[in-house]
Length: 243
Image (cartoon, rainbow, N blue to C red; front, side, top):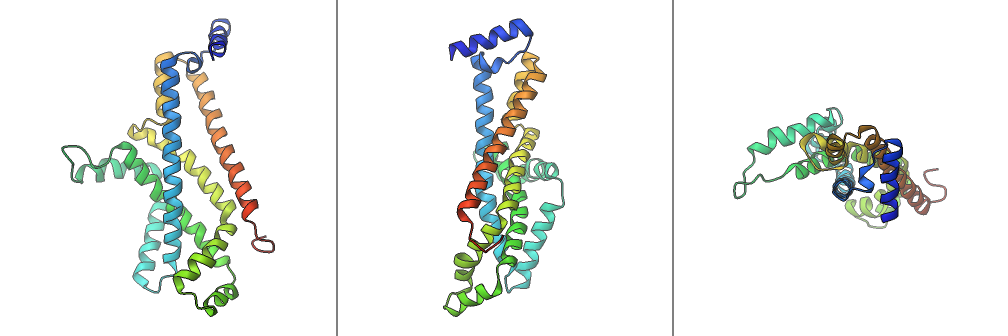
């Protein structure tokens, strides 16, 4: 590690390329903190939005009209309004009116970013799952019902597993979009990757270098997601279904 730090220091002296995150311990710590926060936010939102999206997709088929309208209204609201406006609404409009605990807000900036981005991505996930559910052959559903499965059992054990296989490519795009959308958390001072990088370049005056580092970092994260999802798609593939 000392050799790597010394090389980047030499690079700065020789060429003016200033990548302090590789040899300044303070900048390294801040950058890694931002990277970890981005991964944490993206992971939490990913898990929660997929679970909520699957639930909403199931409620689309509810026999209660009010439930179906409520789900449709939720999806339309979050799909058709700007994500940054949603984030500001939760943080600046809803946050201040909620009760406080020992004088502290119920949720901090990270919490509101998590809520906002989860609901946004859940709306898209619900539509993706709904399309997958509609692709499941009716004969398959009828066969499950003939075996005595309840409505919930048919959805959980038959329809949803098959729908997941159909929606893998679209879900991959949605997850990639989620990682990119986490950058909006910068707007409410969540110490994610862009926020911490901005602190570094404002102090070190190395904007071009940090921009390149940011680009490479997000390309790497998106690339890993694409590879993982592709391998998962191959493992879950059912011959003759969804091809």
